[in-house]
Length: 556
Ligand code: GLN
Picture 1 (cartoon, rainbow, N blue to C red):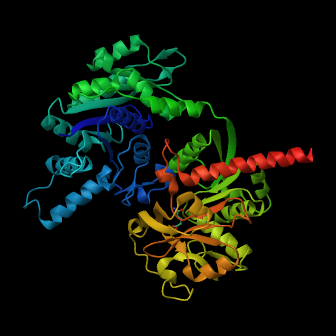
Picture 2: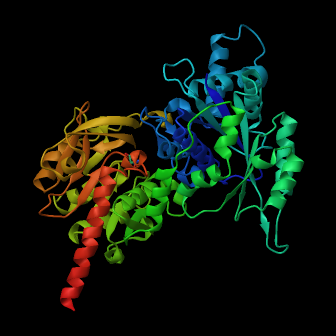
Picture 3: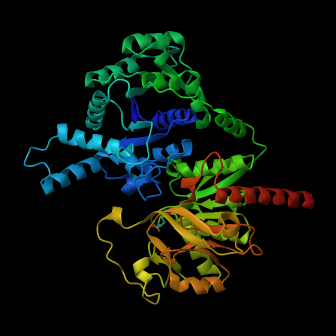
């Protein structure tokens, strides 16, 4: 029987509910339990795919091609269970599904209402996310409810999980509430009042938390913990302090030391072996004791919000850990980059152009790719970063003046990057396709496999086959591949099914490490092994650093 832990949040958002949930899951997994995580998002968008990264941060893509909340990225990095489409749903999806049922007549003429129809639908989705009815038996499903208690939006979710826990019974469900305990500098005090109020709100709805996770900039002393325990009716040992840390990988240890997993297992009557967090300790040790460091220029346009590149930042750090190096990521706003100032990139050990949508900043990214190519600085282009590298090679090596992607220049004379149906079956001539109005439905999404050409850098990294996740609309135009090859670009991987360009690179005798990938490798990196592509990229960056230093010495 699957047991459930419902995680709610109070006072303010951005307290790290995702990390807290993932950490609890990781500790439970180390006790030998099969765990999964489900994220409920209270907004009306059907998925975050159409939301701006400024608004929502990164869109995380699962193997089965779902565009999900970035918390699912944390989940996959913290536990071994892989996330699927069913591990994340929104109010929008729930309503869509209820309204479709209503149109089909499934409700047999009844008045369709929030209670019971919407709340029942939510419970069905939660059970589906936990894999109930499927062959994989999950011991514990941790359900993270987005938003803050007291919001109108999240009310149906809270009501649904309250009902669920009632049906499950007290030994099959637990409630964890994440709250904020602010430090008021003028008074020199940690304040417990917001916590008292948020738990009152929760209890009004009929939910009594079993555990309070108290986020504060420091450890919460016993006196404040006792006060919160008394006012919120939570056992003292259930009032757990979660202070600010410099690396998220410390959180499982902090929560375990205070007995979080023990409490949850007692509540859910789960008899397990003791938790074993040795690998987390080793990881934290590696993070804190790098042997060297390096700087990477990340040339993107979503530079104001580091959440936009969450998985990418993590993947670079993981690869740093594999190479015993601290990776410093510096954001370079591609909108300000041009031929005149691109030499500011010379002080970096590597250049990375991440994924992105829209025309803004693209010429700056092309400049960055050219600079990295000409100066032999390791270059990794991801998705859009692969497309700009292709455009750059087309313009400056293949002599295709004005080459571009039809995403940025629909009338370009050389659409080296275009929508598939702009070039398929035609000889490079552009035919505007009817994109329709459904922005959520036109992407190449999820995991796909490609064959890798022997003798290439890609083959050295991946072996014969690469399977990575996608999220993009445009592709390298088949009709230009021969001309690009003649100009020196190596097409090192082609998708098995549709024969689309997956990886491009420069030969090793021309450039030490220049790779563009149409997929998003960052989604599959873990803190344990890193990711082969990023590990290789960081290694190349360290080699570049060493040879640049040797050159300097030789000159001196
Ligand atoms: N905008 C490009 C496309 O749609 C690249 C997308 C991306 O980088 N994720 O193909």
